[in-house]
Image (cartoon, rainbow, N blue to C red; front, side):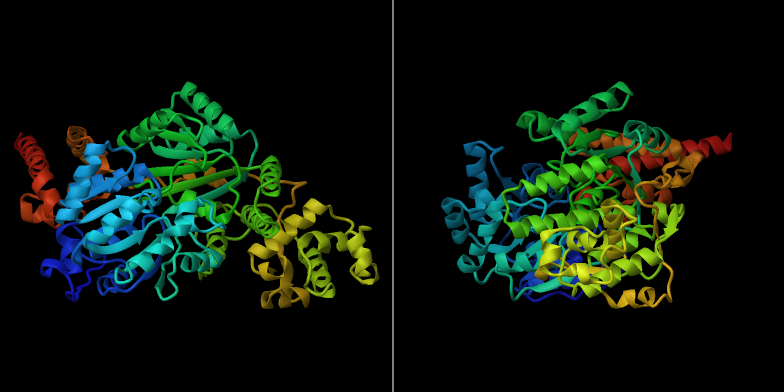
Length: 626
């Protein structure tokens, strides 16, 4: 982190500035990105809407102002496991934090409520269902509240992929607590979802903070399914042995069969889906968080808000239904900033299944159209030949100036064909039909179909009618998706998803630019070499001479974590241990200078680690004397 000196903010509790809390409670020397501006906004009593990628430091954006302001910060969180995870980490840092949820018995819940009323709590986590109970709202009205933080705020949106109806009622916080600042936070939201979050949560006056969506440490790899079990096994054995990861599947049956098959191959793999008992899901999640090298095979029911920093890979064995879902799920890898891999295997059967799911959903026709558009955008990301990271960021209205060099299409360019003529035919047809129609109708015109809609608009009279009969409908759809994802075409959701030309397409139409697109489905592209060990980006290697100390530091961390019943990373993250390995602190002052070690963690864990480091130093000196 870059060291940024932050001046004390008006209203800070106990004369502690946000920077003081950052350094002494959380053990960091400087803020990142928009963190300080967000924190100052909340400390000064204003509202905020925060979009920040997973691993970007969202939690500090509400935890620090909650500690700086008078009263208790109330955090609305969708998952019990997420609350417990956050509270364990905060308590390890010396923060008075608690949660109220269905895992507590009456006496435990009453004790926490009493702590709130006495002013003994600094942060309290609640599920939206619990918060909205009249009894809870009455309790909060009698307490001193520092702020409200609405985490995973995309749950409010019907366009989001983790919709929760209870989030829709959280606008009541503005009416009942008009003087209390509110912050809504999410890692994934396109412009439509951001607008809906602001509207439904009554955050019209909130200041928006949109951080870069780029996660440069994640290597994106996408390949067509070609014996997916063999592909997955090669990936795991050549690159990920002993690493923690998440594998996503569309169905519960596939989750179960994949987990069982991985166990037979010798992997520590556990299933997770909504059909399992609550106790079994909780146990599998607990093992994933607290044990090393566990692989969870899951539906999308798993992972939201999971704060495990050392997930080295996320693999999709089926196509995600949207780019938002893909970004959110892949973002669960590499939260510690170390290299991680996102592998996606997709096939035609995925497209059919997701299309059927969208068509049979209970949503409105507009919602179904939007779901199809999102699926097309996801397919477009799979089919492009250019840098995947560029396309992914462009979806969230962020431009990357240069190719990333860390995705499969950068590392091994796929098979392509000269699609310039086909693209001109498609663009001309869109123009001549008035830029008013969706892809299905435009493709029908190109292929010379005889439909009622074509007859109604007399499109048989167009010069582009039938000029694309040499390609199949699937091939034209693949071309369309690639042109949309690369910015030559746009889909207008306000006009029934009509295809429209962009300024970028002019050079192609004028034959001033040749266009190479990924080989069409009838000749699938070869798998990128990025799937091999030579292309993997494993976490930072430890020098051979340091491995004994590294193993000892990790063993000590595990022992201390087990004594306290918390995951190892609650004691120290890998990055903190690695810095400790490099710096070899000899006293408390040097230990406190290591990133991730604040006053409380120094008091709790400093001496055992210093003792271990001294022992290794003595052993090293003794060997030198010999």
